[in-house]
Amino acid sequence: MKNIIAAFAFFFMAIHVPAQIKTDAWLEELIRRQASPLLLSVLDQPDTFQYQFIYTQIDRDKNNRPHFKNYYLNVDKDRYFNPASMVKLPVALLALEKVRKLKKYGVDKYTTMLTDSGYAKQTRVGWDSTSANGFPSVAHYVKKIFLVSDNDAYNRLYEFVGQHTLNQRLWQMGYKDVRITRRFVTMNEDQNRHTNPIRFIKDQQVLYTQPPAFNEDRFDFSKKILIGKAHYNRDDSLINAPMDFTTHNNFPLEDLQQVAQAALFPDATPSSKRFGLSNADYRFLYRYMSELPSESDYPSYDTSEYFDSYTKFFIWKAGRSKLPSYMRAFNKTGWSYGFLTDVSYIVDFKNKVEFMLSGVIYANQDGVLNDDKYEYETIGYPYFKELGSIIYEYELKRERQFVPNLKSMIFSYSNPNSSSK
Image (tube, rainbow, N blue to C red; front, side, top):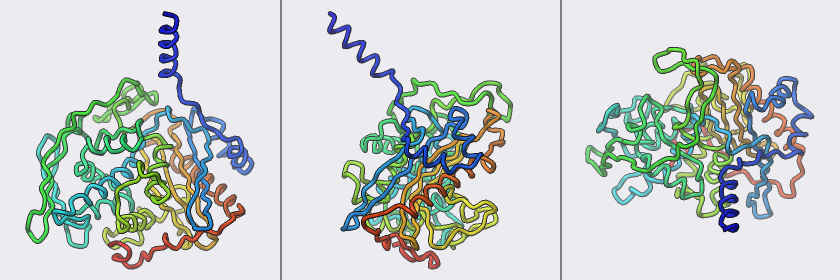
């Protein structure tokens, strides 16, 4: 009986002990030693700003194979943050993975993809004026996701992959704390479980039809997630109570970093965590993860709004000035409800420097959500920019046994067709 009681006590403790906050003293000291008063103020208020930061060193061996070492600052897998557009990264990857499986039908990522409607609140897509041929495709949706974090593009790939496959595939890869439960459009839980019928067409012939689907999987919503002190609801009415994120998308920062690393370095990733993409898919992916809005012909963007560092937080430029031509960030960002997130692989081709940075901050000092009064410009973006600058300066001086060969990450962005097929 004593053994049984002890076993139950151990089990109870195991499921209720929160994850330990990860902080490497070396990294914190490096940052604090060079931090501005603004950054120090943020670092001194972890509960207010809920920041997390991961610095990933990359060292190449004599065969140019990458090896990774992570350093952490205030990283807590149990601390919820709204991932916002960060979920577009795995959705884009899984869409490219899924469309490869349709090759036997004559379908590829460039094939015209028409979305139909089969359930409440669903909408159709039969054309896309931003594409070169006027029609939507998986490839064009992926481009828009990385160029400007397009919401509709995410919704369409969410519908193509399906809520069931999105979650089951990520869980299978070991990301057990992840859940992707919703589009970025007003829908309830039931409507988000239903996904649209889809047709792939070439030369007016239907190559493949995907029927509507419903996800019957159960999600664990037992942990209540409440954020803020007040919020505006969908009717723009102020509710003097925290906003409920219990059923929202969830993606811990460490998992996002691992997904990005797996996408960027597939040959250095265990097979169980590797996405099923072709070499051409990876080349396509890397180009649009790093391309700037000003370099895109289709779609063509107003660069006064979509400036160079629009989705490049760690190399963000105040005043929206141009980024250095020899630097690229292969990344994905997210921003919503006061949360800013960036997971980025940064390359300096001139100085042969490469590293990864992943971070999140909550910049909402009044505690009211959905009021569009967030401190992105005054606290959020400067937080990312300064952390990026501190690590970059350190990387410029860091000794490496072998200089990395980074030629595989160089793209010609002036030609809209280069490196895309």
